[in-house]
View 1 (cartoon, helix red, strand yellow):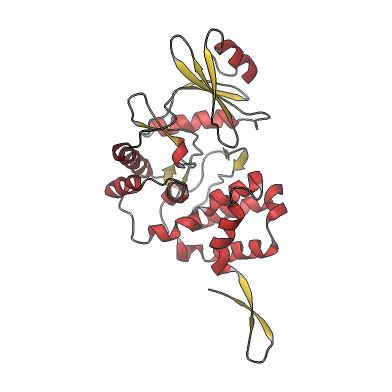
View 2 (cartoon, helix red, strand yellow):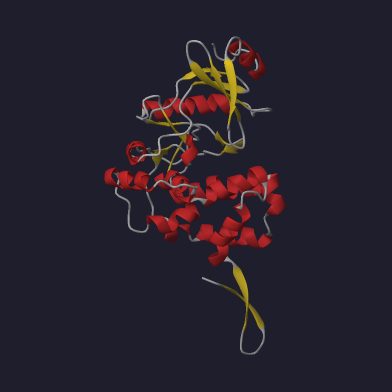
Length: 301
């Protein structure tokens, strides 16, 4: 299979000749097909009306992670609306050993350091652009490119209130108090537990990246705040890259990047607004009545 050969429909028709084609769970954005042929199994990811470069950028990200030590599926072909990959086991082993190996692998990835925050080009998180303009300051980068940038998306604009926006901006102003300064590391960028799969030998492999140079906390928050967070992943990670004692406390704040992305993609779904407003609660302005019964605007800290 060569790059950019035909549409997703053409690729599936060609691969499906004499093979079993099974639809897999592909998350919110993609439709994913497993093709069981006589010689090997492959996976085809497709997206209707895919943005330009969506799958090309994903293929490049998989290559970056592989070159820096993570196991990723081999890219067998890429087109405008499809990506052809080596098949992996979608449900990893439910074992401590598996998640310990995954934790150590991600910790080693985070030891790869960059000079600045960002990436050479913008990428994609879901089907919305991941803005990667270069920054020397990690807090400015996270605020501008990972949080506030989603306020301009139509679906976010439709559901976020003025109070939500004000509280988010207040949180951003205090972000250096919440997240300690750290140098830029190479990150997967979309590291929730369903993007950790297994090789045929049962070893961890990683899919669906949104790579950039940023804080390791971005990856950790995806694993920590998502469902079914594997404790042994963090134990093993800590053995390679020791975590400070307050790291758990800041995970919900860093995870707002994923929550805002969800709101920008789908509006008020999956409990995203409830989560957002709960994290923002300490940063909201509140009307306080004093002893003279005069309303005053204050802020609950």
